[in-house]
Image (cartoon, rainbow, N blue to C red; front, side):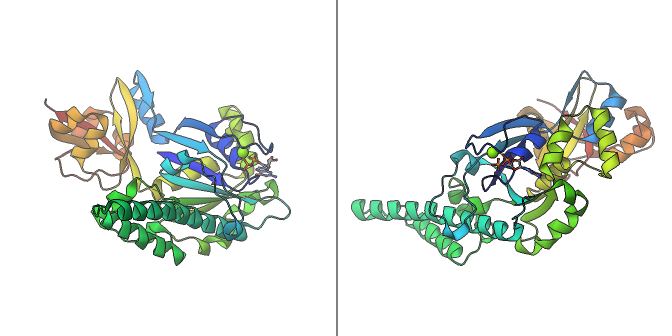
Length: 350
Ligand SMILES: Nc1nc2c(ncn2[C@@H]2O[C@H](COP(=O)(O)OP(=O)(O)O)[C@@H](O)[C@H]2O)c(=O)[nH]1
Ligand SMILES: [Mg+2]
């Protein structure tokens, strides 16, 4: 999963990035530097299975974070968008909003960021519409008429201040738009970055602005980036203690990851064998045979069956033999729809 961190300058993007990726990049320096990191997704299920199976290797799912400047936070009043093209390649965007400074106005900032994303996509569309129209006029080539019409339809949609993720497209249309990587076509997670004093009010603060975002494709959460950044610098035990004292059940970074998974409709299944215990990320609704393909195309091609155990049953019975004896391991065929937390052993033949 690739997550882009954007927002206006000094909103705490790099702070949140550091917290998410356990990095120590400079914060508060007004620099326009981009940072990139790949992290292992914390997953208790992987840890627990590893304790039971004692594998040679443990592999977590991975997330790539890209912290990149690019928004002014001036909304419609802005006159330039210099978005790092790499941001367009991210699957979902995390928009960091200042909720800590004395003149913080999260609602206004969220609206401004939404406006700015609309304008950035409109600018991209306009450029392409002009280019295509000109080319068609010069060459008389009509082959791109359909795409041009589609781009115009998108432009009109944005003019009505609606994000492209809400525009219904058929498969062909979706395919021809994919390459443009429109910002408003991506799921968004707004992160309101609050001060230490408000650490106990994060839910309340998130709720105050929740009406601005469209549930399902957008989500909103609040955290204290600075505190989270300090947390990751601590040793595991120290961190646990610290969290407990603050009355925090899960570090906010994990919440951000969970919400991003949910927005993208992603789930994980697990494999638990002696060579390796591993989490695999798939789109929710994926069938067993395609889930197998995430491991290797040979397993998909030569798929015979999937031996599936629910994670909770695995915890209760602990070994494959006990699971089989208790009838907790099911044999499933190609069309079985994999669930989050399924522990799967694929049988295949190539
Ligand atoms: N009080 C407080 N200050 C923060 C928090 N997060 C960031 N800051 C401060 O805001 C400034 C900008 O942070 P930075 O991460 O560099 O913002 P960026 O420009 O969006 O990358 C720095 O001085 C940070 O120390 C926070 O959660 N609480
Ligand atoms: Mg920064």
